[in-house]
Image (cartoon, rainbow, N blue to C red):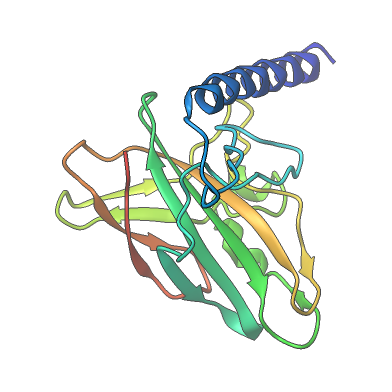
Length: 193
């Protein structure tokens, strides 16, 4: 019980910190003009219990990449941002582009025992730095849960799910990596920040 309370408290503190940072950032942005876009919310660095992230601030209208999966699934990568803590957070939308309900394949969670034990997730995602000859796996919390969207299984026809995955950051000079997710095509993406 104390571990669960500590994890919830930690998530609450992270959410509060992110919200405070957003408030300061939004307050510092100049307004005016009819062409201003509405500010977008930022994704939290760590999520659990199947929560769905908001879109990340500064996210492009055009996806960085679109990866086709099986049975009409489509993963649109909307941002890949490096943060000061040494992480890269990849945000996107998992969409059912077919005209029938689709079960998201269990293979997207990967096959590592620790991740499989924690249920459905995008824990099988990797970033590949071909120049540095390194592969970066989704990070895990102290209980072995992947730092990615969890708790999903079926998408109805046309349904879209906002998703995120967090990885260790490649070296500062590395800005292009290949994003891979089991059962989906691979695609190059640019890391910002």
